[in-house]
Length: 599
Image 1 (spheres, rainbow, N blue to C red):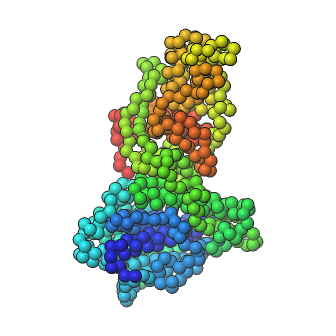
Image 2: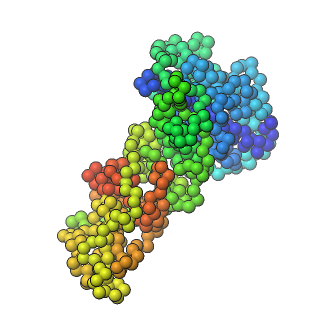
Image 3: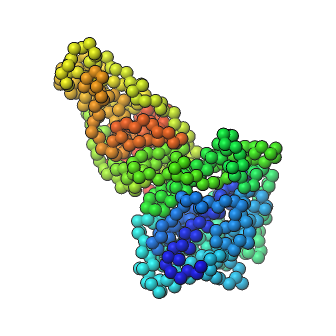
């Protein structure tokens, strides 16, 4: 099918998204088959190419969005069933999920093969090389802009563009596409990184991801380096081959992964099947995050990239797991799990989903604000003051590890530092843990007038030390002796209502329902007194789901850890105080620290 209309062009740009993704499972399979600490140079090569394929995927989605298309990644036919021919290729070769080997590298070279000077560029449904495909896209962009006008072609919503302000971690740059010039620049970035600068040099014009003082060679030539066991250096050409420093390539220092694993090869209930399902749930969740990124939530690219990093541990466990044939190991299968069967999936209603060892994903356009705790001159907690309403997308990710440079939002740091976010909070019901505070009304107190009684309960598992339960000299249990006085009851109730975690609750009569403050559905990024930061304060009954998909009890108010140090993750246990956790962005906004540098 030739590209005759704008709709044809949109369809071809979706093909570009499909193609760029199709390289990722084979590259990751080879990467994770290399045993830890071995083949360092080869690991750097494959990882750098993978990261740039993430960039190419983003650039293709930006172009598709710019011309009014809708990128689709979370769909059953998006992941090829390996072994497979590449989408819309000429079926000259098949691509396999295989271990790191010369045979695998030969396939990678076919994927990244440059356009030969003798190749005749065609504008058909199948293409021999990536360069040929993108050349057809470039020609069609120019022609349609001439025929229809540039404004008619680039009719997409600019808010859907992923910009270079979102750091993705590899070489090259994210190009915001708004017109023909920027679209052609995005196409050239893809072609140059794959084939070489200006289709002539082995170098792509970027700095080496791992060695910034060196120029980066294009993907095709990077893989050539591995086969030759030698780096390219300035002055080298495609004809000369690499003449730089030699490095070792140990083809035996790999896990003997069985080619093209499938979950159906193993019985349900087996350890292998469970591990494959776990990986496939995680990978399908990454596709969901990428689709949301390219459909109006560009800041999620940090999270999606981080989750791609996070697949490593799951993949290596599969690489180490015997397949049962006495020779090979299992390896990841990269199979699609439908949204209704997995943890990370689109949601229309507000909810918070915890990513394994990663951030809080907030769905449903939940308002996000900053709140500052107001204290007396001697540090007694009085109330909360809203200081800012934060701009957030319909779906956003909040940092859980405490190390993000974009707090309160996640920037993918959790994956790079291999943060352990294991959740160990008590998942039982609040009613099973609460204990009545002495001094509360009881069934034999004789009180029958509404409001004359007060039953105070405490769930110590939820306490995070906010201090609202204490006056200067007395805490709520000390005040209960005077609870027969209506003024004291009112004071106690006010203290309970301001407790962010809901550790204290009360009812007005024995056996009566808990009375909760009327709190909006929102998330507050809290700041304690002085320069220290506090937890996330979730209000209004927003459901919170653990990383295994199971829900916590939905409550009117919850405090979630964002310093990364809680012993009862995901709940806050007050660890931010002894850790002196600080939110640098918030401090800069309040004039207490210089503004952090742009990253």
